[in-house]
Length: 341
Image (cartoon, rainbow, N blue to C red; front, side, top):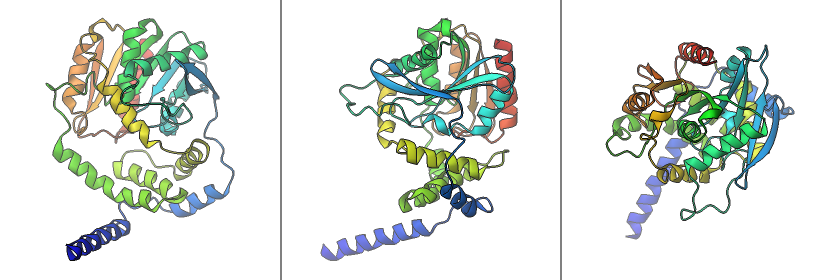
């Protein structure tokens, strides 16, 4: 037994050494120099709008309101994915909305970023997606915004659906990306095993950066992930380095407990399918045909459940955002926002 344990430990160490040596996708040229330069300089340019906190049922929610660069057409509120703080919306995505005349409001879900990390949370006393929808309305109230275009990604899509159900008068339009009305519905396809294995194979080399730790490696983890996703937009290493460093230094970085909290919030919330038939806000559903986490059938059924919805189906696209072909996606979003306004 002792010999077997030693052999097992040796194999484990060998596997860890192999993982740490596995380079994964190459970083953009000059990435190391750029990261080092940004690390040595004062951080600026990450939060540029008007930021603050509001209370939602005793929970502190952080928000930022970014003004448009031209005459204002309306307000777009962004609701991010599971466990992810609002700083990680692609800056190019925000800029395109801003230059088109939209004030962009982003906020941190409870459990992430600068919002309350919910130290008293437990499985016996969880919060729900309905509670997270109230967080959105608390942000709109704090900024005195009567109606907004709501854009939700994955978990954020669940949340803004809840807003459209409970507060229809606050919603000018919905854009629902890579999401579902009930991811726990047993009649719908679940995560696809082979696709998940392929996604894990792509993401495994990134784990080495997490294991090595430190600011530089955590920046490289994010940059390498963007490289692995592919896409038609160049990766701004300097911009993303500032975002990761700001998140680490000012917000304590990623809160792994938020993943569990958000998953439980999904599981304790009733299905939205019976309620979406009453939604009147113009709705655009965007979904990749190769999404391994929420298969395309979720997108199709979601679009069918909302009378005003239209669908944009991205051939061969998975779950990560930004999508590989953002030019076409942004054109569809802008057209949708303009028509709703």
